[in-house]
Length: 138
Image (tube, rainbow, N blue to C red; front, side):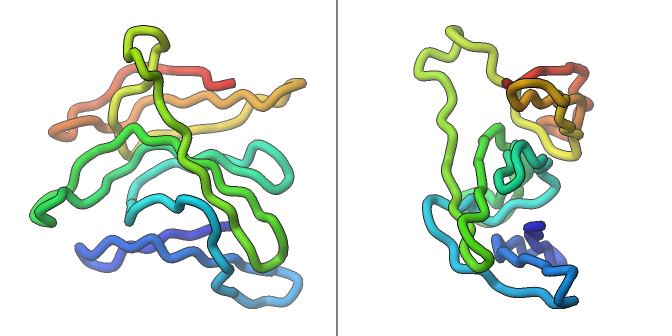
């Protein structure tokens, strides 16, 4: 389980892994391209050692406000102490593939099938307006 923190108004992207059988948290080694400091995102397990993270809120460039994002990252537990992150790029031609709008406070769950399929629904978009859609990612 990976946990990203938020403390007051300071976002961070610290990664922690809990080992229930040991009853302790560890700070794993990170490889690849980890997400920027993010809050109110959704993350869902798609295989025994891999998860997909979508959206959330990141600090603006000037640090004075937060902005919604529609970024996708995968994280894979490579060993007991290493997590590998990858950024999944959106379509080069935006109209070629339906890509979700920026959002936070949304829900994602997986559907059991031959290949991992995720269902994402709702959330809040820009200016905290409710997003009224449901999308599949496979």
